[in-house]
Each structure stands twice: as structure tokens, then as C-alpha cells.
Length: 368
Image (tube, rainbow, N blue to C red; front, top):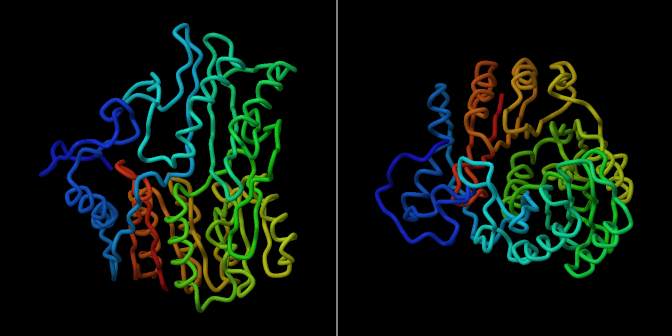
């Protein structure tokens, strides 16, 4: 979704980096124009494939200072350390001094990240800092851009950083094989009656209020379902809150996420009501016959969508599908397939959790 060339009204941007940083494309738009354009994006994508929602709910708005996750780039250059986001249309880094979109706790982390990068990265080196805000504080994963030995000096610098920045957990390495270097507190997320310890660099919904809205929508729309399958479940953000009133099967292709779900279920005593299943739905989607054993499905695929899984759902007898997406175009493609298979799109809810950007989240209810 790209913004048009001009907007009917403009306002003073909220951030000094606007126009350079690639994070916010329409921060200068007048509120009314921005809201109308953002809310229309999912509807326009559906219209392009000939799908009309039965009811369009008001768009949930995200306030500034609410985003609880960020992927910062750290680069140790000859001029010093840069820490921030990529420039618009470039691989160069905007050295972030402020960000009205992020939680203040994440913005305050930036000076300490710069100091850390100056110590642990060689000149010319870079790293990605994946920062998540959890119920017990900030969780940081540092992903070096090149193989670096985690020697005593680097471990000491990481420990000093974690203490000074009050980091709950600090990990190092690639997401699937990260080593926890410092664990001052266990990072936890409360999902209904289940507490989950997310793996380092875990995918979280961008803001806590929008996550709560998506979870509430799923609970309301699935009120009549007793057996629910959560496809692309992640750490169970949308489905663990349904327990123990409903039986839930969570299917996810990331091993660490599945392990986190299983541990949370075990700790809560819900192993009989919920289960985590490791399965790559892109290459091995749940077949129609397997889907038919459930009363409803939650469907929250990656940004590219999931045409193979949507095709199997279209052939199934699932009474209810709750879909969540961060890409109206791939959602519209999958929705068209479901409608062709005999479903109707009853409700559509846009969610503006990517403030001042061209991205929009949405939730939708399909019934056969």
C-alpha cells in the first residue's frame, strides 16, 4: 500500500527524522485524511478481487509512544556508532535521536546500545538489535552481522550493558540458535491464564492495545466454538487466551515458539486443553480432512499470506475462520479463495498498529 502523491491537508511532523527515516511515510498528513486513507486500504484491496465485507467495523487507532518492538541496526563506522533505522530507499542508517512511535522505554535504550556497539563490534562491523518489551521488562537479542567470538571481554560488556539498562534478558546470535548471555529476569507475556516465556527475538504484535483488541475479537467471534486450531500460532498470542473454556491446537513452524507454548501450557496445567504442534504450514498445510475435526480456525499467516493453507480451508467444512493479516493484498487474495470455496466475509476490522506508515493490520470473520 503506497500513499498517494498528495494529501488534502498537512500538519507539522511529530519527529525530527521525518522525511529521512524509512519508518513513517505519512506523519505529515492531517488526521482526517490519514485515518480515512488507512481505513480504506483493506476495503480497496478486497474490492480489487471482487469481495465485499458484510460489515466494516471502525478502525482501532494506535496512540503515539505505544510500539513495543523494534529492530534497530547498529553500525560501528569510522565516524562512530550509528543506531537506528534505515534511511528511506537506502541501506544507510538514520542515527535515531527520538521516535514518537516507539515506547519511551525503547527510545531511552538507544544511547546505551550505541555505547555497547562501540565495545563489542569491530570498526566496520554491524549488528541487529531485536528489542521486545515484555511484562517483565525489555528483552534484547543482538544478531551480529558477521561471526564474532563471544570472548570474555564481549561477555563482560554485555553483562555491564544489561545491568545499566535494566534489561530482563540479553541474548546473542541468530534467532534460531541464540545464546542467552544475561538473564536478570525471565521475560514473560501473560496470554489469558497462560504465561509464556518468548524465545529471543520472538515475533510480537506491534502494540499491546492492538494485540488486546485482536485477542478480544477472536474470543467474541469464536464464542460458539469448542475446538479451535490456531494456524501460524507463533507463541499463542491470539489463542492461548481461549483456554481453558475451549480446546486449542496451536500449529507453528518455529521450534522455539512451539517449545515456549508447550512450557506455558505445562506450567498453567492446561496440557489437556491445549497442545503445541511443530509443522511448517507453508510446505505442509493442514489438509481439509484434518481441518474438519475442528469447529473453527484462527489464521494469522506471514505477510506474504498462505495460499496453500487457504486452499485447504476453502475445501474444508470449517464453520468459522478468524483471519488476521498485516498485508491487505495477500489477505484479499486468500479471502477470494475462501469466498470461492463457499465462505462469506461477515466482518472486517482494520487496526492501525503501524502508526504513520503504509502498513495496516486487520482482523476478519468468515463463516461457511
